[in-house]
Image 1 (tube, rainbow, N blue to C red):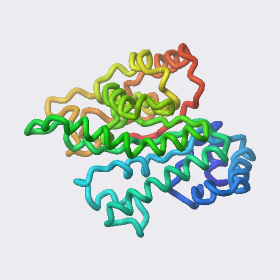
Image 2 (image 1 turned 45 degrees about the vertical axis):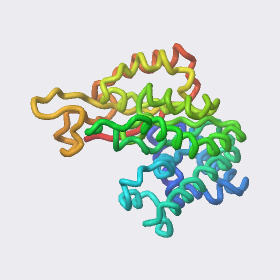
Image 3 (image 1 turned 180 degrees about the vertical axis):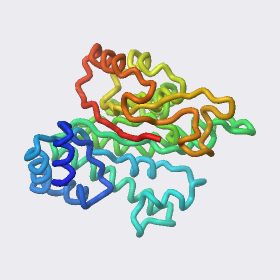
Length: 281
């Protein structure tokens, strides 16, 4: 952590969004139970002029609600003792997320970021047509699994920002609204806003802020580009990144109008961090 913190500070960053999956950098087991450890982590970062923006449980959130069709592919995200065992995988995910809630409180944070998982995602563009009730049942189950975790974050005074991301059931405005309703409009359900994922779905990513600004708790600064192709389009996941019409790029090299994004967030008094997420084809 000290090495990475020194590097980040040297680049001019003021905070780090802390993933919990690598104990060599951040030990979630210790952070969930030890104020002294959390003070130590905050101290290491403070020595470089940094703070934690949020803890990130993207992997655990995805595993919590991964459709069984993915089978052992999902094992890449879980420790050895949970691999090949669906119940063990889910138990691990719940444990990680609950520990993250406790660590969030010990670290003095008020925001958290994650992914929803994808129980219904395999049926996004299904043929033959989906049976009636399948999506409703999937989102009811999604909410059932998340509700105790949302309550745990509520108890520590933190919101949970779901990254609207293809591959997850919560990936656009309507799916977010469906999930929010399924949780009983839980006060702690929030959005991790990433314009790149909205742009590549051909969503008006600036207008999105007008509609959902009250629920946005965090922000990934990530760019993307769209190069119209006579051969491929939005559903181009079977070709390499370099061949896709829609591709992630370094900030400033893509098509995202970050001036519009920052202006919109400022207009609505967004008080969270702008976290650089770098990915370039």
